[in-house]
Length: 532
Ligand SMILES: [Zn+2]
Ligand SMILES: [Zn+2]
Ligand SMILES: [Zn+2]
Ligand SMILES: [Zn+2]
Picture 1 (spheres, helix red, strand yellow):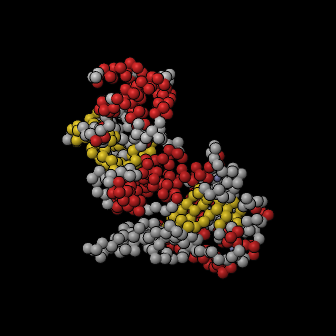
Picture 2 (cartoon, rainbow, N blue to C red):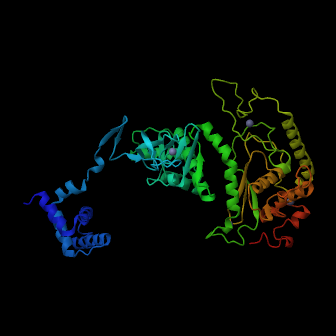
Picture 3 (tube, rainbow, N blue to C red):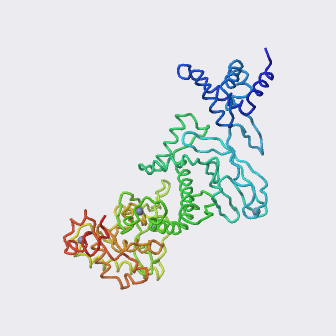
């Protein structure tokens, strides 16, 4: 009986070392099949084909048979020496800076670069932290490695780099391009791109709140017994998942829509810092969104039909997404010069009553608690009065119309049960959304005008035709007020659509004479803008 080394030597000589290891792995794998499914001649053919394809060699059936016969006789030894089938049950521990890592099984999240982006010097002083990676069916132990550029005081990790001193974090395409497909910003958790994709799919195909999704994940980990001894609770996981998923989607969104090379992120995931970040950047994101989607027909290879898809804009209110908002009344938007001042309502969520204290008023947000409220400045008071007056004038002007046409809502309608009115959305006939505004209050004609003007201000390419279930009131409103203090004329108001029509479904409920003629979408004056 020859010893192990002789056998390996004989095998190596027959087909070469690299092919030999490949053949061993294939043979052990394929020998699991019973001969009734995979007879030995077929198995030999498969192995021959695979090894010749892979290494561009021309071994004969006899070569392969000779090797596989020897493997079969020495199966145990081959398994022990070459295949190390017990690799994943093994633990090889390594201690670095008080962190014990299992170099065989732990994921190691290295920084995405080993030179500084700012000064191109090599990074030094590596640090290690034990974290956990949230995946679809398991939680994986991982070691997050960070490195520093001492000269620039910048710290680099797997997905981003940041300055603690100046409190910023940045991400670029190469840091997002993780070979492990893992998103890690800070603290003790990272997420796989797969689990983000999983959530996105659930969101697109059905509604899936973050908390429901985090319950699903926890159930899966328990079922698979793959929680790596981490006991996650649904609410903290939902918060953690929500902030990571949103930031990840925003990074992808900016890379897709803009010419951006670097995206800014908050340095920590602290709630206040996150909220501040979203408020600071929402205008920029809206600009990217409306500019990109209102011109989407010119994107190469787009599926839309270029002549029809953006001929008109359809405005519609969606009340499904209503949420609790603060009841404070006197909030005006003065940012749109043409509209002077307009009542919009406070968008913040009311405070939650804490059991220990009854000083909190649960119908107001934390900025509008009666206990801290200061009297408004003179300018603000003036804007408030003006906005209230405008909405009264318009209500009086349109009151007669309200009797003849249904669907009319007015700006001064009260907020019911502290709930917002949902979303006012604009989209092209192809279904692509090009603009949206959260309607805190009811959508009156001033709110619809504000919605359209803020799209134009943010770079939306506005078609000259608009369809809306209350287009008649909007037309009367514009005819009456355009050119007045309530709606001043400018290059921006000139971009408002000039052809207005009711959609066919709602047109039937309108009895006013214009609604039976020029407000009809197929009226000849619209020259086919709404047809198709
Ligand atoms: Zn540097
Ligand atoms: Zn389209
Ligand atoms: Zn408020
Ligand atoms: Zn009407």
